[in-house]
Image (cartoon, rainbow, N blue to C red; front, side, top):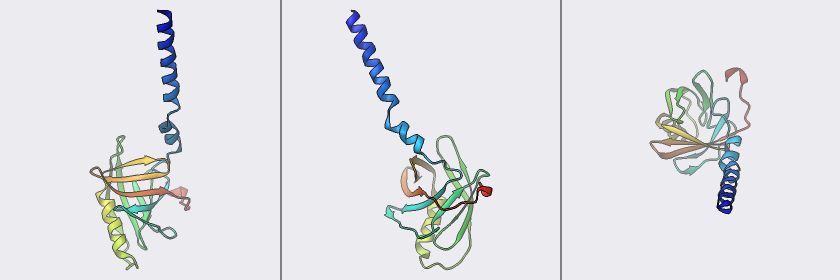
Length: 149
C-alpha cells in the first residue's frame, strides 16, 4: 500500500516536473509582442519572400493603428485584437506609387485586409484567414520610432 502511494506520488512529481519544462513555456518566453515590434513578411500565400530593406513591414501601435510599407508604398490601417488572437485590420490606406513589384504588393495589401486571426511562434507571427495560412512575418531589427508605439 505504501509502495503504491509512494510510486503514485513519484509519478505525479515527475509529470509536474516534465510539464514545467515544457518546450511551449520556453517558446512563450521568446515570443515577441504584437505591439511595438516591427514585423517583416517572409511568406505570402505559401510563397517564401525575401524582402529588401524595410519593404513589406508592419508595426502595430498601442493606439490601435498600424504603420508599414509594401514594396514601395507606405501603408496605414487600424486594427482590433482579442485575447483569443482574433485580428481585424481595417481602413487600410496606402500611397499610390507604381512599384516594380506592384502585383505582390497588391497581394500583400489584400492579404492584410482578409486576416482573421494570428498565432505567435517565438519571433514569427503567423497570419490566418478563417483558419487558412495566408502569411508569415518575422520580428526584425529594423528601427521603429518609439514615439509611435
